[in-house]
Length: 77
Image 1 (cartoon, helix red, strand yellow):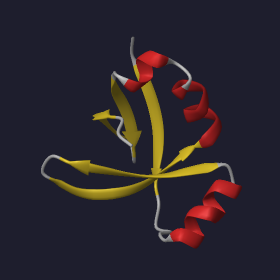
Image 2 (cartoon, rainbow, N blue to C red; image 1 turned 90 degrees about the horizontal axis):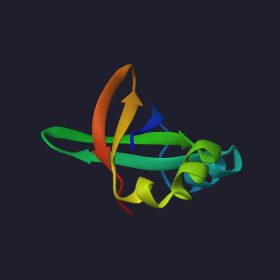
Image 3 (cartoon, helix red, strand yellow; image 1 turned 135 degrees about the vertical axis):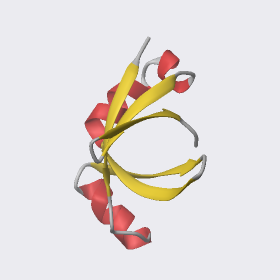
Image 4 (tube, rainbow, N blue to C red; image 1 turned 90 degrees about the vertical axis):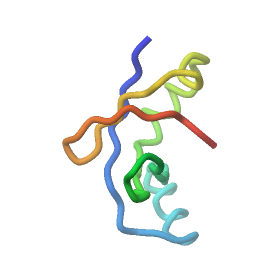
């Protein structure tokens, strides 16, 4: 099963900014690993919420679109 998620880069960081994002219906996250620097991202809450209900989503390699580029990613904590 293929799962696709759409992420946007974010410039807001910190606890209070994360709270504001959650109130706006966004989920903060970070993409890291490989030979690239870590990149803070934001995801749509409703889209990710419904995918998290599927058990296969947790164990699959996901296709993430970020800034027009697609990458293969794994879901972690």
